[in-house]
Image (cartoon, rainbow, N blue to C red; front, side, top):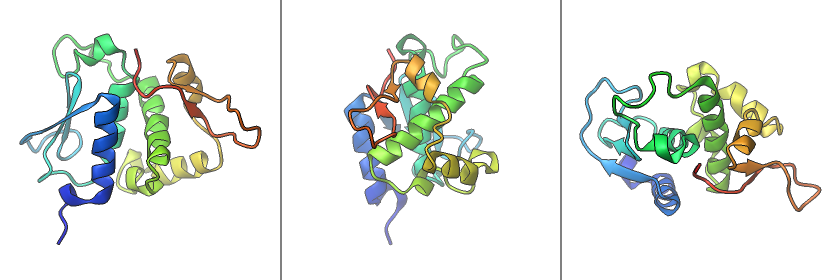
Length: 166
């Protein structure tokens, strides 16, 4: 039987994160993390594959790192990080980032937006993104990560300029 760690989808995600400069550190985590088997540390994701329930959550948590400024990424998980991080805006930007990343990686949308996540709003998010309602696009544009401008007039899909915020 294939374990979570051996799945093709997880390998695709981990290779992508490595290619854009997001480190994934395998380590044993306590049972009280916000998402089972996942934690965000300074400039990295910490993953306990034995406790991880939804591998697509790795892409979402990576989105939190990606939309955070490089200076603040180094502070994540420390007492120097502002208590209000991530903000509501960060969360909205992260959700679109993770959707665009899943599309870029050609993963099924419900692999990331699984029914047991997103405060029971995964179906609503999938429906909106699938219909071209890219909630959070102005934030990703403001962050310098994405553009709604494309070279193809028939394509309204946002274009990622880069995957990590400066």
